Amino acid sequence: MESVFWWCLAVLAYAFAGYPLALRLLVRMRPRRAAFGGDGLPSVTMILSAFNEEAVIADKIRNFLDLEYPPEKMDFIIVSDGSTDRTEEIVAEFVGERARLLVQETNQGKTAALNRAADETDSDILVFTDANSMFDRDAVRKLAGHFADPEIGLVSGHSEYVAKNGESGSGAYRRYEDSLKEMEGSLWGVVGADGAIYAMRRSLYRPMRPEHINDFLHPIQAVMSGYAVVQEQGAICREPVDEVGPGELKRQTRIMTQSWIIVFSQLPELVKNRRIGFLWQLFSHKILRWLTLPLMALLLAANLCVLGDGGFYVLALVGQIFFYAAAYAFRRADGGIKQLPYSFLLLHLSAVIGLVQYFKGEKYISWKPRES
Image (cartoon, rainbow, N blue to C red; front, side, top):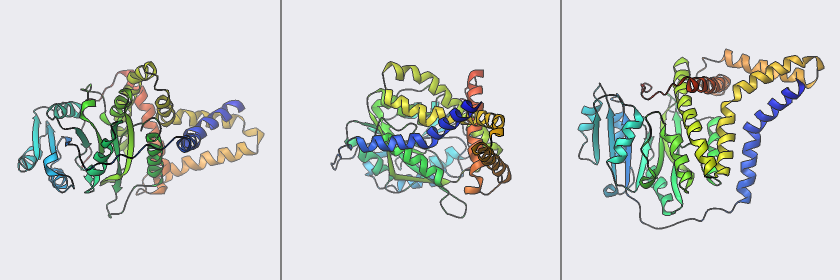
């Protein structure tokens, strides 16, 4: 069991520390991408799937109208996905101010709504967003500026989570994730866009299956088409901080089930097209991370078996017990670093449950969004 202990520890260390270090080394060795200038901006359509978003939809449209982008080059398509509240009535009040309303009479799911919206525009660039995500005024301009480079197919922005007191709720783990994406974008492409704010070439859009999630599939499709996928940290949107609790586990499980569907459906194509660098990033950043909880359980079991050898094994066990105890003790903490162990375990538990759901054939085509 000693070898099992060290193997698990090494894999976990690689996933959370070794991989970022490897990325940093490779980025330093790789030439920087040439900057592209030019005053011309592409035409842009922002698209949004909305289900019962009456609480925030008016603010979202006003936020769109306030963006710093040539008005004649940007419009907004909102698809009401079977809304039963006042969402459609509120959007209708803005129709004519570069906002368009499409209605799906029944709740068909977000993916069906995005497919329909993409089919209704011939703009150069599509910008994907959420109803409660408010863009900084220059966000779309910063996203669109990258497309002057003909090699770039998708640009992911950056979400800032705002707590109820108005302070930023984006912590160290979020900054860590953003740094990984920025380095991946300098190499073989960002693995997973920020679903609240990203842009892609309209020519790359392909109708998605109902069970697919766009922000994970689109970067893969762009890479498969030979385009670069990059991160733009300066393109910022802001949304309320996530509430971590029982409901969050259900939401994350749905996301993880859909993510496993994409992994298992796209891996053969990535292998066939020899996207080795992107495959390494996908395995290291996503797949290996999603298997963290089984690795931690195996590490703990092996640790108990070799505890009699004393020394480091005793310290390792104490560290693990402290981590799990902190997760339980601060499971209801009001965000912040105290709740990090609980959030970490909840996220990785959802990955395991999502894998089980995948093998059971669950697809999560439609769902209710969080309360805005």
